[in-house]
Length: 434
Ligand SMILES: Nc1ncnc2c1ncn2[C@@H]1O[C@H](COP(=O)(O)OP(=O)(O)OP(=O)(O)O)[C@@H](O)[C@H]1O
Image (spheres, rainbow, N blue to C red):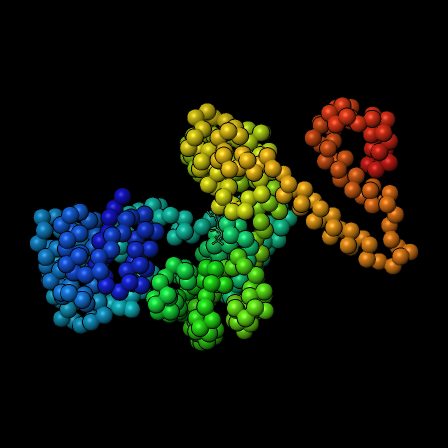
């Protein structure tokens, strides 16, 4: 893996550069002073150096000449707030590869770093490459609704709020929307990635970076404290402001009632909304998702899931949603030495929760309660009788059961210990089968 030395005393900038380097597939090493940088360069070989000229302990130009004096000097990119022609000329004379002025446009410096490291575009992790919309898997009705919302959002240039539990694909959906609707790279900001004293300056930097046609992804916007919400509410209405895509796993309307989120900002950022369903609400998507995630986890290994393993996956509650399923498939790929993944190849925690199906019972009771609420809130004369309600429950139950026993009533009756004559009568009355 290529290694990049970042000599920069401004924490926010150093962290942002480290993120860029990491996303390019290289390892960042940060030094906050000139001497620190030189020490690190003496101990390790680097493939590139990003060097700030305005360092606290010595001139970056001095660091540059010291680095260049080594036996195999790496290519060096200079970053400076004191952009003068002299500095630029001197840096070039001392052998700097290129020269960048602060405030730094990360989108501009990124291709330069890639070129220095001689990294092919394909090396980029999916978060920086434009994600392929087909990578978002889902056939369930709730997912189809989400796809329609994503398509609308991709065709517009208005702010979008993406909601759903953690790991449901909000960020992936936002990346797809951004890639489809803007040529500029996506700028990202997440409040809890920064120390409190750097958070505001970094937000401002991200807002500036994405100005004039860019897209700013604000991950988990609910974390933003009120004073930064005020900054955001003011800035995103200014001319040239970036398009904002915001994600939230917590209920922003509830946050508004509790005084933790500004109502005006909520309406500003939620012109369009995309709602990603929980994985436990779309268990029919689990086979396709699990197969794809397993393939990604073990490319070329041709692993597939046994019926038993799939049954277990479908029964799990998945609080971590698709992210948790992806981790489970990585686990399976690591421990499974045969072509077929069995329940014992799944993480032990899943094997335990998969046995406990109480969450499914709870879900059944919850949806039956909602169904009854709806059925029974009508004038007394229209209230259905008990047998009608029971028939409505039994009809899908029998259809589903028959499908599992090859559509053979005799097999179903034997397997579930049912009276054959009763089953035949029910099939005739409820499903019209002779
Ligand atoms: N429908 C999907 N098809 C394929 N992969 C998916 C899908 N949804 C999510 N993923 C994958 O699951 C992982 C988690 O998704 P993502 O980071 O987008 O979730 P999130 O909702 O933004 O989570 P958080 O709230 O924790 O930030 C990612 O690796 C993503 O690529």
